[in-house]
Amino acid sequence: MDDAQLSLASQMMDLGRAARTGAEALRLAGAEARTAALIAMAAALRQAQAAVLAANAEDLAAARRAGLPAPLLDRLALDPARIEAMAAGVEAIAAVADPVGRTRERWTRPNGLEIARVSSPIGVIAMIYEARPNVTADAAALSVRSGNAVILRGGSECLASSLAIHAALVRGLERAGLPASAAQIVRTTDRAAVGLILEGLGGAVDLVIPRGGKSLVERVQREARVAVLGHADGVNHVYVHASADPDKARAIVLNAKMRRVSVCGAAETLLIDRSIAPALLPLIAGDLVAAGCELRGDDAARAIVPSMSEATDADWPAEYLAPILAVGVVDGLEPAIEHIDAHGSHHTDAIVAEDPAAAERFAAAVDSAIVLINASTQFADGGEFGFGGEIGIATGRLHARGPVGAEQLTTYRYVVRGTGQTRP
Image (cartoon, rainbow, N blue to C red; front, top):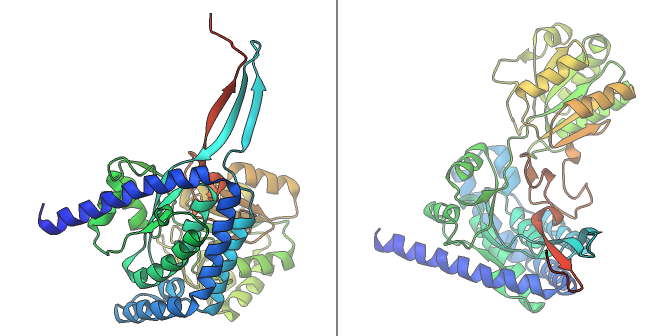
């Protein structure tokens, strides 16, 4: 290991040790202190708007020179409205009930022991993300709310923006009397820093959360020596059942795809029942095309709407994050469920149906983190769930699933109260 590698390793170990100190301070601070810190962090973000915009302009210029695609540029870009949304998001998290110390369940044993399962922080979370500077604020705020220290490692594309946002957040923390070590950021773009985090920083890191593209998530899951809370691509479906209300179907499909195409909750495939496709699919397709969406259909869909391009095998599992939608005609509920199971990512899937039995069958059979009935997939968002915000959408089956808010960033322990009992 050369001097540069030794220096980076030393710096990262220092981050880990400081994070442990910050985690203990947060855990013991109490709910009111954590709330005060979040409110101060939001105020500091607003005050730092000019500095954040200037830093973001640097990132955007570099990203354009590097030829980043439009969806990534959209995720990277900040403006006054998005900075205000970040600050408002931190305030929304401040308004969420503090989960630390909450009694989840309590019972009394025949011997008189009273046992309580109590929420507690996980400890130190490492957040690794790509071209999403807003994640800096989301991750720091949710970690503070849940009593966890956080080590932030943003992508090189958003480093200047993330550093400016982080500086504001730390000013808010310190104004509220909490240490800067509660929310630290990795200041280098050296990929070796990620490797050191995945090794656990000498036992300092309790949980790693990746938020980004498939290659990032796969690397984290492959190399991590600590627990990972990951997600798959957002290959999300809207299935229009034969019983669907046509007006609802048109509005839901258009919103699910085109409200914002670059978010992980955007729909990527439309499935529609064969019995209603001749009448309804041209209307849905007209709405989408008018909004600027490219349609790629199977043979049956193209027979109804000939202007669609031909869908290939690569389209069905694709996460476009762009104004492109795959369209398939299916022979009813069970084939739709089978298609989603075969090609989806178990992220978010929706049915449009007036038949309650069909809707409930879909909800039971589609094993996705989020299943919606008669609502847009764009509601796959922690803020929309009432969590204040989210650190991502978990698609695994352990610990947390779906939007990961403050409560999902806690674990639990047992507090047992006795009156002198001894075990025979």
